[in-house]
Image 1 (cartoon, rainbow, N blue to C red):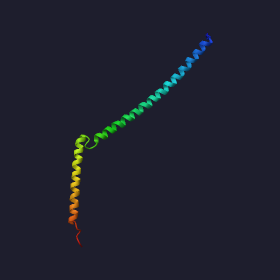
Image 2 (tube, rainbow, N blue to C red):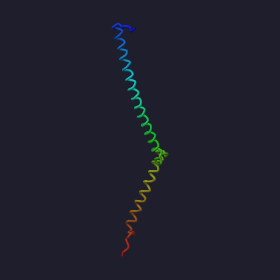
Image 3 (cartoon, helix red, strand yellow):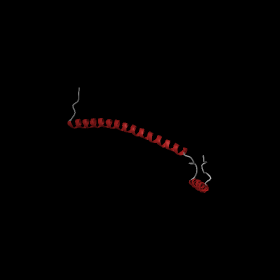
Length: 100
């Protein structure tokens, strides 16, 4: 035998039923969003790891900034010395081409 509900009880039942349906839809949506967020986080973590590996593979990365500055200074001095030598030898005409 079916029980009859009072109008107030019926409204409350319908309201709770509607909320329940929409909550479950919201949960499904949240689950999908959560999966999307997890996928994006995984991609981001992968990119960060790849970047770390690239940085560690860079030459002289283990040198401190001061050591790198000293190496740069030494290399510039070598370039200046070699440039001066090239100018000196260019003026001496030592590299004349042989006449045929």
